[in-house]
Length: 318
Ligand code: BDR
Ligand code: CA
Image 1 (tube, rainbow, N blue to C red):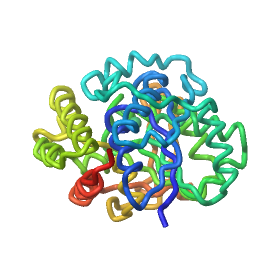
Image 2 (cartoon, protein in one colour; image 1 turned 90 degrees about the vertical axis):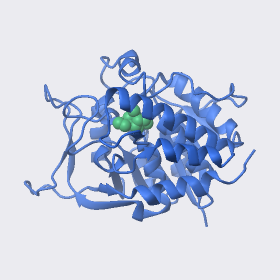
Image 3 (cartoon, protein in one colour; image 1 turned 180 degrees about the horizontal axis):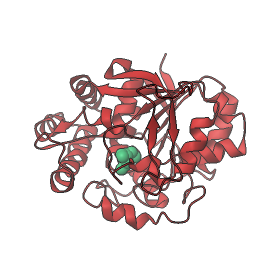
Image 4 (cartoon, rainbow, N blue to C red; image 1 turned 180 degrees about the vertical axis):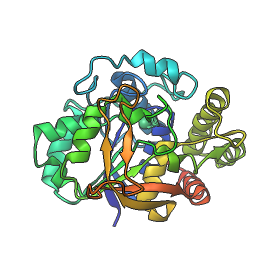
């Protein structure tokens, strides 16, 4: 039976690849997409999600718009992200105007209601700032306990991408990330930059995706090529002509856990440090007696990840 999931994202180029993988993989049933302020303003994230789903013939999957701001901070202007990521993300994804429209319910309400109706049956994959999840936790203290499993793209151990200490999704709403880490989710898997940077996609692989001749293959090729241009210009990966596609790695790991290697470790979020705000403090050397709370991905399998993209996007859906 296909695994039911909800994807919470800030669509974004790599989020769009995650949406396509979740919507098209035969072992998954994507129930809905929730959007959150992040890579671009939330209204753009919503529009980008609708465009992506329509482009691959999955306009039947509902999209719910979520928080336009972090839960506490007022100092996260979206243009900061836009400027930093102008070469990796796009304000508007290059697909035709969406025909579908967003749902009237807000994303946190949708999350609360849907998980309450089917406790323990649906996986939540969060690949943007964690604002909607924190808001859902505030709306319903039982929310976290109703989620069968939470997979988060976020954080970093040795790497970083927004400050020397922090990864974007956690940095963008650190208080929300702290709420999520302390909530009663039965299982949390954290997929940090250290893992996603091992599942790089190259320009040659983009050509293979395009050669599939499907809408999803063409879209993935176009989005990842754009990312590669941005990484080459601003933050080279160390492997020429490649880029990570962070968010899609979480979906691949849900289908095939062997895509990542995890260790069960304690993770807390730094919300106050002058230089370290938004850092995921991962106790991988067991320096404290804090109990493990998170399955942290330390590695990712590049070949398995790419094979899954190829086989999933090969099927014609439009
Ligand atoms: C994360 O931040 C965003 O830019 C990406 O979509 C991804 O979710 C990587 O740090
Ligand atoms: Ca994202």
